[in-house]
Length: 335
Ligand SMILES: [Zn+2]
Image (cartoon, rainbow, N blue to C red; front, side, top):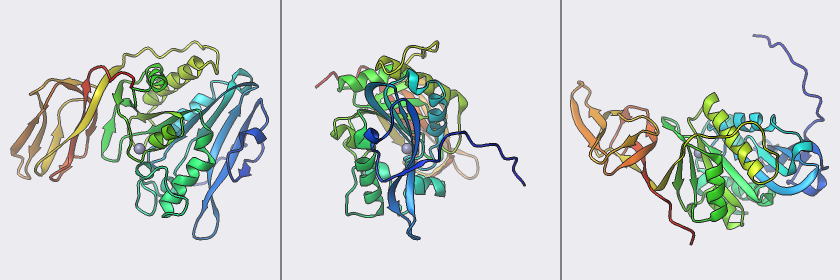
């Protein structure tokens, strides 16, 4: 069908750039950039969109990356809503928002980079590696290494759902403080030496936190809003913005560790507890049925915990995930 066209915003055309050069951008303005990372097979530049809000006054560089997994899109809406809440005149420092970080995967509506690899397992990539390694490496060297604070926005994978939760190295005081100000439903302590963008950012001295905003391939208004309020609170806490009227006030459950539970045989899976529900050791958490409808197996919580995420696809072969169990307790203290 034919579209009704709306006039574009009266901002200038996006600036084409080869890297994020913050010094070259005027203070007190919002800048839209397209930053070149690699070329596609037609020799065209693959460019990452960057929205840079440069405050009128000095302050830190706060970076937000979203859709590093191409089908995890709640973060895109969060960024757009967040940036509506302040202007460059309000801001001390710079906010750099990358609404779509993994452009090829976003276009394919997939989690992984088109060569089949997960960008969040091979960071910081390699300057002369495979396609995904080069993309990862340039993402860090051309954009992310400018950040002082960083949020990497994700969601659950296809076939699963997540609470609004944070993975962060809670032994790092600044990271722990950021996580608590963000007020997610759950914080899971996790050190991350595993090729994630968060781990690579931390190796560069950037204070980095992973925020998991619900479910893939959709916008969830409630979780987007809750995250947006928390991120705004964090910018206020860092003295980049003055306090507004909204304050995140939902309780946060902190977990000292977490892990996934898996089925040891195949069938039709039902996971019983809801997200953020507390489960007790020995409580039935899942049932497996055969193709005739008979209950063939059930699973119990191995210890007390809280449901961080869960499988929603009932089709379960041996080794399929059941749920992500968070073990409630204080994270280890600073080391
Ligand atoms: Zn992800």
